[in-house]
Length: 347
Image (cartoon, rainbow, N blue to C red; front, top):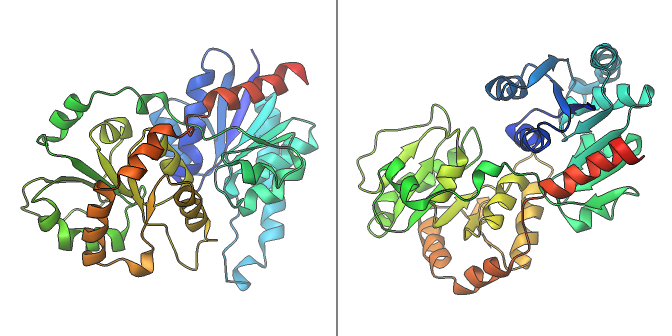
């Protein structure tokens, strides 16, 4: 059986898509994971994926002095990754972006092991830009991104099968929600302080007509006594959260955005905007908005009043609902797996 070594880390957005692909390849290939001792190690443990730990170096945006030792640390990390490659002897390395994929990709190229990477966002991340020339294929979620690479192929976004086909009535019962429309609100795995604060200041008004399922992030729950307002710090099974959602408010990381649109859930995106981001979420949100597939509220315009107003606009946007029903955005697992298998067996 052919062996694949998956890599990517730093955030769940780089890891969960790999888990989705490993699930799709189960029984077809033997799958392993290489990453740091961060979130990827925890997610792999939860999903019984054989994990190898390797140091990786991260560029700190806007801080030149912090990055002076990067070349020396990178050389050490490449050596460490190489030892793991020599032990596992994979037939292919699959990268999902983030700084954790750089050492394995370079080490694999030195050993003539095929490398494939996948870029989720409209604007490619720094790690994928760096390793692209070392890759047989650069798979992308968006067509415009694929055109930026000589080996680019648009496949769509990886998604876990458990997100689809869930029962809405069971999901409502799971959370103790009534039959009114439910607005799912989440700001990424660790939550969003600005979204949490704005929502809590207008939740009582929104809950006069709708339920709110608020995934607020670990350690962020506060006491609240509002009928219809359900607060959860973290949800391991996003399929059940999506199943009860008639509408959603979310950041615009590519994975969550594509999931929401593939599931036809009308969504208000509040893209992350700060100096620590390259602006990828804004570009994602604007692309979907221009296609008529979402609404957007910019972070610098977010207040409790603007959030309440935009919830009403979202719920009453019939054009958006029609566009979502016609949308071609769907799970990209099949296309990605085909590209992996073609590289393994035909090249």
